[in-house]
Image (tube, rainbow, N blue to C red; front, side, top):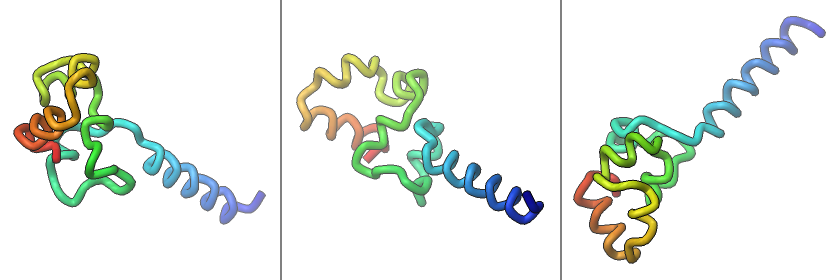
Length: 81
């Protein structure tokens, strides 16, 4: 395999890793522009469990039991909308 092909493979792996990233720090999701590939309407799903509890002041399981309108209001109040 030539070195040019090897470099292209590494680049593809790096791009895939960035696109497949599933969690981001709270600061990255509250800032703009958002990381590439992040759904701006579902920022809470990209938080680690620790950041989720820090940002929304409840566990993910508690949040998921709230009605949709309460979830939206909470995200707006915490800068995640």
